[in-house]
Length: 232
Length: 232
DNA sequence: GGCCCCTGTCACATCGTTGTAACATTGCAC
DNA sequence: GTGCAATGTTACAACGATGTGACAGGGGCC
Image (cartoon, rainbow over the protein chains, first blue to last red):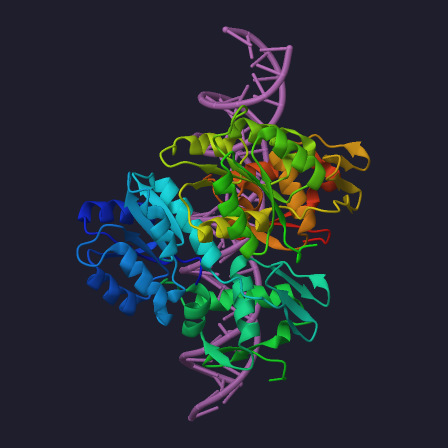
């Protein structure tokens, strides 16, 4: 859900440059949107809600800085990180760019590696490290910060998928979910796996939780599964 | 200790620039020291133990880079964050500056806002100064003052990077960190290295700690690493 | 210059995880 | 009880993530 590529909007009026950037980013696992103009960029933003924007300094019509400023002013987009791209020699613009609210600033030419590294850094800082509180249910505890699960204080060994599954259940208790819903929420929307795979992971999770807590994961016959403290 | 403004030492031979920076920083709640030369800077450092140094590239006598290198080499000042200031067009020096041990790098002209932002970022990353107590965990001890690590009283030979990595872990126990976060915190946000590099240094650290303590550094599959005394 | 240490990266080895299929069991409808 | 569908359980091969050793470049030191 989070690890699955973030969406990056590339705004540049030169198609080859956009393309080059897009290729680099896609290889790094990002999903790319491209826009040649401010107008196009804006509609992309509205339609697809990208996680961040790569914005060229030079754009036909409204300039990049101006656009950045506008994005930062609107509530909807104020939190969206922006990296500005500029040709070498326009160094003076740097200050303007950062003051317009850009989160970082890259001078062309740049290596794909540098781009990806900076992009990662910016995304990392922008992603609110929400105050992740541990969740505890009758002796079963999941601590997102430590990335650890304990059953009556004893550590529980589970793989990443089981961890996400359990986390989802513990944050959505008492409600039944179909296998399809679980695949959506835990695996991520755009993967194709058999629904029966869910059963197997449920089994693994139950086994890992042991007799002490396996009953918390209940089968809802004909529908799916439910995490509940009440007896079924 | 933290709430009260941090002390920042400004080293630049041009008084007006020092003044401008000082005003900006004081408005942001920092306490400023000024030095026009390396000698003056050095005595300020000895006398007042600033929390960080803003260092101009061009200085009479010893150059800024050289001074930075010297600071990083001496135990007393090795942990002190440095931000280098440079005039426009000396972009190439950037690499030199960072390699000399600077934590960040700002090109003149810069906005006060940028300066304060970067300074905050660097300070945030910096290990909390002040009373540097040795940290001890089940026979593994790290003494920041002596810059030394011992495992059951036997000295542990590690390089600078492994030392910083271990120090970070020991001051942030139990919590899981991604490779990206470790790069941010231990390497500094402005270097671009492969994430797998973290694995290699983890390996070197584990090897150096030996069987007695290597288990303290735990792999969190699919996520990163964690320093913990509890079994995984 | 020559030596040594540290660093970042690569290639390869190893290990854990994952999805699927095959088979066993359960529960429900009749 | 019988039959059928849904679910539980196990085994396994492929894949991805991590461990590991080796290497080249750079800088400090003499």
